[in-house]
Image (cartoon, rainbow, N blue to C red; front, top):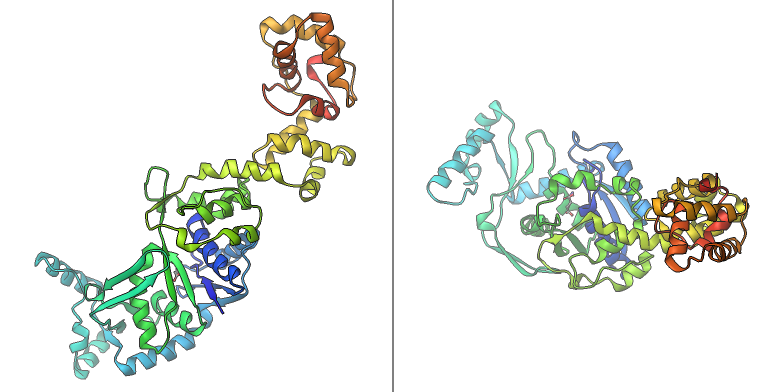
Length: 440
Ligand code: GLU
């Protein structure tokens, strides 16, 4: 069975970049009737916060990306300790003592000699007596001994990848204070949880080489990996600094529809066109990881608005009934109000001003040359409530009285009644209007 996971670190709110990862893993599981795990990578006790855990769960639930199982790394520390013991025994994990300053010096020396700044494995050469002496001064920490060879895998997006781990420093897996680092915990989890597919950002490619080796060293089978390109801004600029304003919760608060986010993220960076899809089923059906390319993917938050608009235009009344009623729209006109207003909004918050217009009338817009015409027309408009034929009857009467027709007839009336040059079909709108300020 396919098992995928989304593994955020709860050190912040999730953003569009995370969503892309979450969605791809969710869709792979969903398409194959597999299982999707939400795994909290929370071994960093200082930076992980309950607030972020609650936040990311709420965001995923809102999006409909529900998980079949929840896992939390901070609850698995005993297991990591057990695997670490095994790796120490086999010599895959070795103790080191260099301070950051010492490491920095080593790095600079290597760079000066024109060599790659790869850790020199001095820790491997320490005798038991030397280690004891060092331990008396400071706590040791643990590095994983990489095979100095190439690590290769068939990447679901990048194709054949080959990483020369001789040019990678042996990674620190366990810190001096005992904290297990992500690279290690993630490898243990992926093996233990039977993860079959991992999709994540291209920033993890080097990690993958390391993790494949860790998994093999612990006797496990690595999953299939795929690395999606990272998102950039519309001009190709890095997004990392701006991701804070691109959190799912902020976009949601600004009225972005979840269907817009999901539809965009399911297709952006792929060879398939971005189009509005109204359900995760529909999205899953057309989803194909092989359609995604390795090039950086431009993301423009503005693209979310046309999709949000299209989604709101397509929403059936039943799904927004409560929201419409909450505005104070009377039950008997609520459906008509939605029919009329929904075609003229971007976010659902835009319904408020449309209802205010129906209830209180709009500030009229009257061009100087139309002032007399509008005054004459207003005298011909009966008092509210208006009916189904009010607009037709009224405009016919105004036409007869003034001789105007077409745009010259309709546009000044629309502007006078709604204050806007564009908007709903006037015949449909009139029965909703309780007041026309231009008449006062
Ligand atoms: N916690 C890691 C991250 O958010 C997970 C990466 C992975 O999928 O392995 O980057």
